[in-house]
Image (tube, rainbow, N blue to C red; front, top):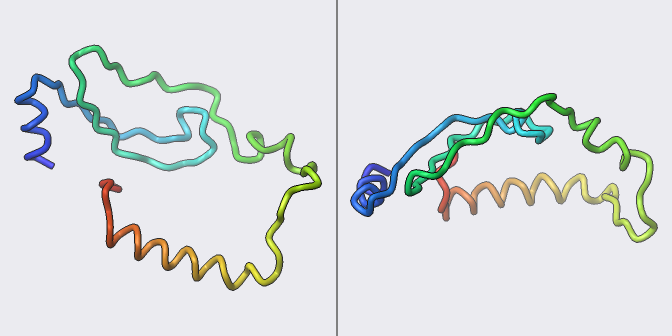
Length: 101
């Protein structure tokens, strides 16, 4: 990371970082992310947006309506989904291209 930052600074990029929480930007997820930005001096981090919204509020209009062509999970998916998620985590960490903090 230090080498990448130094290379960008050598190209006259200004490197700035901030720990941001998605819930503060109208995303119904309470997840912090380290955001690193390299720019030529014109970038500004966005201001926190209010009010915060919950997943229920974000999805309320969809909660009881689904189009006829929707494909919903079936009972056999209860076994498949955890296996899929486990294999994807192994794959993502083995071939990581993004720094996840």
